[in-house]
Image (cartoon, rainbow, N blue to C red; front, side, top):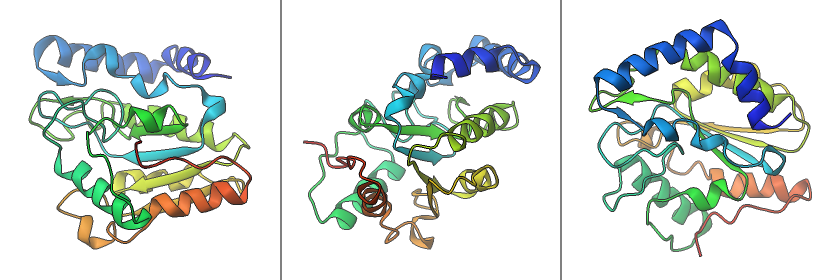
Length: 215
C-alpha cells in the first residue's frame, strides 16, 4: 500500500468525512493554514523511502509559514521552534547548519514531517484540535508501525508522545523529548541529540543515513 491508497481508504471513513466538513467550513469562513492544497503535502513522498517520522503538534498559525511539512517554512523569518531545531541540529552534529527554513530536502530523503493536527486557524494555535485530525494521525502512525522497514520515530511534545501507544514494532526506534518551542525546549529538547541517534540506528540497520545538514 502506498500513501495514495492509504489516503483513499481514510477518505471513505465517516470520521474523515466529518473532519473534512469541519475543515472546509473553517477554510471557507476564516483564514487557515497551510493552504488548502498543501494540507496533505507530507504524503507526497514515496513510503518505500520512509526512514524517519518527525511528529510535532499543529501547523504554524502565522502568515506565510506552514506549507504542509511540519516545522518547515518558506519565509525568511524563522519561527522560534524551527530556530531551536536548527540549534539542536548544529549542536548534535557539530556542524554549521543552513537555516533557510525549508525542510523539503529532508522529506525527499525519507523524513515524514508530520503534525498530530494538520490544519489551524490564523493566530489561534491548536484551534483545529479535536476536529478528528488526531484519529487520522493515529491511523497514519498505526500504518507506519505495521511496516517492517527500519523507521525512527522522533516525537516532540506531549501530543506527539501520546502516539507511543500505537508503536510496538521491534524493527523501529522511538526517540521522544519536549517540544522545541521556547516554552519547553529547555525541559529536555536541547541536548536530546535526535539527529545523531536516528542516524546511528539507521546505520546499524544498514540503511543510508539522513543528511540532516543541507548542502
